[in-house]
Image: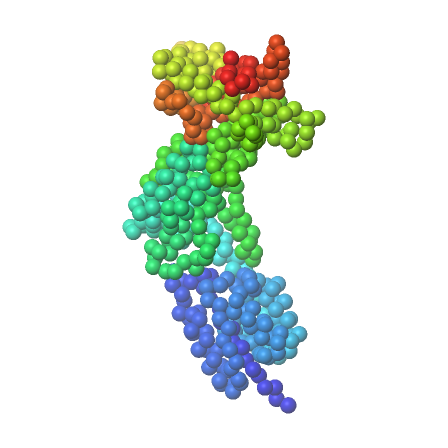
Amino acid sequence: METVYNVGIYCRLSREDLKNGKKDVSMSIQNQQDMLEAYVNEKEWTMYKAYIDDDVTGTTFNRPGFQKMMHDIENGIINCVITKDLSRLGRNYIEAGRHRELFNEYGVRYIAIHDNHDSLNDDLNNISTPIKEIMNEMYAADISRKTRSTKKLMASQGKFSNSRAPYGYLKSKEDKHVLAVDENVAHNVIRIFEMYLKGNTARSIADVFNCENILTANEYFYNSIGKPNPFKNNKNKWGSATIMQIIKNPVYYGAMANGKRSVKSFKDKRIISKDIGEWIIIENTHKPLISKKLWFEAQQIRKRNKKQTVRRSSNGTVSIFAGIIKCADCGANLVFNRKFLKSGKKEFFRCGTYIQKGKNVCPMHYVDYLTVYQAVLTNIQECAVLAAEDEKKLINDIFKSNGEFKNKDIQRYEKNIREYKNRIKAIDQLLQSLYEDKISREITTDLFKRMSQKYSNEQEKLIADTKSIEIKLSKYKRVEDDLTNWTNRVKQCLRINTLTRSIVVELIDRIEVSESYNINGEKSLDMNIVYKFNLNVQNANCHKKNRAS
């Protein structure tokens, strides 16, 4: 009895099948479908359905059209599958073979027309089938390798190669691999960095943007191209993760960062995010929105916040000392507490380790909030006075307090560099003279070798020593420049009477608080304010009477 075939034709096209950026006409979906339908009509079989996967790689079998076809096979709806060739079924040798076996198990006939494959004739004549499937897989692997190689080359040249420009930028009309500033939203990016550098958390920045109804990056993108946002829902709001992605991206100081993600292999398309150290970063590729200095300052804050738990109060605000005030003994954050008593509101800090693990692990380190507030305000005001009266002396004092630069004679470094470079030039002249003396036979070859080796060794050491000192001097001058910026910021605090979160975050690295002790029957504690650039200000005997001695 002749089998009645209910046929499903399967058509697939992927980026692997593109030529010169356009779909190969001979491989197009419509062309495949027309050819397969004609074949079914010629055989006078029943055409049930065309299953289509457009722009889907053949290295995976998790394709919508293919999965629908498998569902119909498993439910006995179709008993014959036809493709243009074996590669349309898939380019993964093992998986393609497994699915052909599944077809057999379900009693489904499989035909690949151009490869002359028919599962009814699966004998020695079809021994070429697995060979062709291996070749198909090798082709996919080769395409994947070439694609990765092309992307790596573009990354090394600092070219933009993604389909969508980062928020704040557009693809240049002249060259799609170059970014141009999007004036409509660039100010939002600048504002994000300014707010973050002033001590706002990513969450609080997102809250402000949502309150002001600023379009999210996704919403803005789809609005700009005149298409509905496919991700639009009630949760389509700015989030802290989006804000942090912007803050971490070097693109905003004019650097192109590529190679942030990769797939496991050409068969496994799962995406792997790479560490920032593995990114390919090429600088000065386009116009920046912020300076490189500000970007790196933001990264320092981000790394510090990552190590710390910055807690917000119930109304969403962040304590001005959050993540900065520390236990001098265990290094944990001091946790802010508030109690409402009959006598009024009481605000204070206690060691986080003490709260979690008890006094046997670490003492309480109790300190009144106003004590900390007044001590920090007073010290900042004192630094501001010093910076205004004698900025150079303040900078020198900070260097002297820094172990790395302590007792370093910078003028001697500069003198040594000059002397070394002069000696290097003199040795060049000596070597030239020696060579001329050898040529004129005024000295022997043996003496020339010994003298030239001696001078060459001396010169190599001088070159190495010069580079070493120049690195140290460069580091010193870089810190000196940063320190000048710091003192300029401190001078702005000359007349402040209140503290803000932004002032504390900009100027202070950490505040270390000791456990209390008794002096003449009165409880006291030590507070060490560590300003950025290691300016340590000791406040001994901070009494718990909301004043510091």
